[in-house]
Length: 100
Length: 202
Image 1 (cartoon, rainbow over the protein chains, first blue to last red):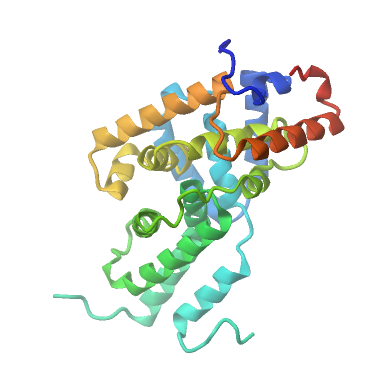
Image 2 (image 1 turned 120 degrees about the vertical axis):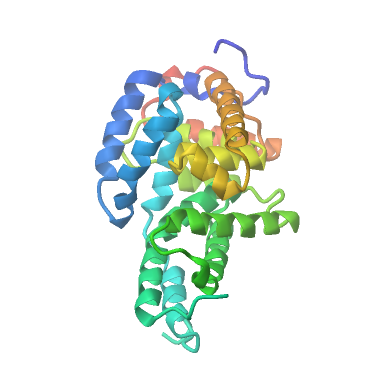
């Protein structure tokens, strides 16, 4: 924890911010849960958290929430049009996405 | 030897399930290869392969796990062709990881993503599946085609490496020194303009 960084111009994040791992992490997680508590992808999340609780939750470092947040931030992005085009082409390969 | 071709209803059900897992495929792909544009290309490739192979999907099983295997194989194929080598883009990753407004420590996330991308691919993948995607060790092992013990060991090593990097603030830089120095300056400007610059000591 107290080890000096090896690179000269990299400032550890814990020094740049008033970084308080446990308390702020919990609050952030609560905000996230409300932020992510909507959308079609969330049907899978309860199933996910059950399994996670069994496997990994016993020793989760304070950054573990960030890892899920990283993943969920992409899950919750709106789907780009290219995916909708691709999906519509699946049914009818003759229909090109460039038509509309 | 093979089942009769799927009915229209079965195809529709398959498509619905495939559509539902796209956001998860995108998240997994982005964790694997770092760059959003390449990740999305990978997902589209995997979707087309999944669609073509839908007769092999067992209805009632996990579409997410099944498509992750396809995505992973597409990624590994591309890796072997060196498509992703050295392609990590600091600027793009920074934008992805910017946390929603009002959230504390937004940079923390990008540090984590950067640290994640420095892990060896098989450990990164294991950690993504278990720690981010929420798969059990058993599911992750079946997605990666390896033993459960191997997954546990990879996840453990990945966690240890991330902990050491994040808690010591010792994250290897992938970019050139110029780029990282530039980024550090921009970050500090952001901190100062957000009124949090007081605690900065260089």
